[in-house]
Image 1 (cartoon, rainbow, N blue to C red):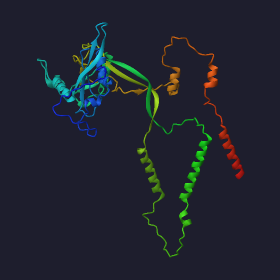
Image 2 (image 1 turned 30 degrees about the vertical axis):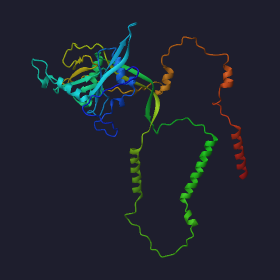
Image 3 (image 1 turned 90 degrees about the horizontal axis):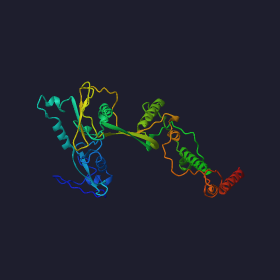
Length: 414
């Protein structure tokens, strides 16, 4: 309901076992375990929005590119609106719907599209979707595949499977292309070792003191590792015996070339195990989305059979269309397959800098209704009393006394 109350009822022949995240064998979590955001769920919002297009339609949807096809569920939802008697305005009161297995829809789709409903000259092996020359799909109002002859395509964007056909439908105004910009996006870019920054850090004397202490500790540890302190403190006496000269084994005598080859191979192997770290950075992103137009031109004049290598029909009281693609026609369009993933906007001008682009081409801003106030007579009080001095580089008396004391002791010992 609109207040956030969710009620459900299960219709299953066998009792449902509790969901176990460790067991992935055709097991799906319960409906209430996945849909905990009530009115913020996608199926709720899509049903309410599609009510403006057709108030009697059900909205069908499937998960995006679900790998486990056998356990995929189809969600069908419809919005329930209540109209006010006073001003005759309506509002969403609730969303009702049901879920069923995609395998049932797949079986129904294949049975209907592979049958002949014409009594004159129709053969199922040539004139239906059973033919190898025809590809049949069920698409939703955003261009995603709900059912097809290949179950692996379920949940994929149609432009990723048949990009040229999708572009043709956009050109014929069957689908409308909507470009959305995200001016507060985040991009994860790989760190490059060759990238360098010419700016320097302002180090304090304490930082240099830490570096000095670290250097001294490192030198002491190096001296301890390369000095034989155990021999110096040992009280054992030397025993002189006649020990024959040691003869080196030719097999254990490795040359420097062998060690150098091992070193090169180790460096090559290190490149494969190196982790390519990414760093989030602010960027502008753009994405192209598609929506089905309200009026679909079903009959279009075409000069040849391959001028429009597809046929489509609207499925009544749903957000779906049935699309049949002629496989005999070559895809004359030069466009390739594409997807609806957001991409980073690359600016060619101003040294490919996002900051420079926004400085020269700022977003359109509406002028405020009030007059522009640039100055105030009491601004000097803010600068004198309330503003900080973080930009000023000054030395404190304590730091000055420590430096003088250290310098005096150093000169005294020298």
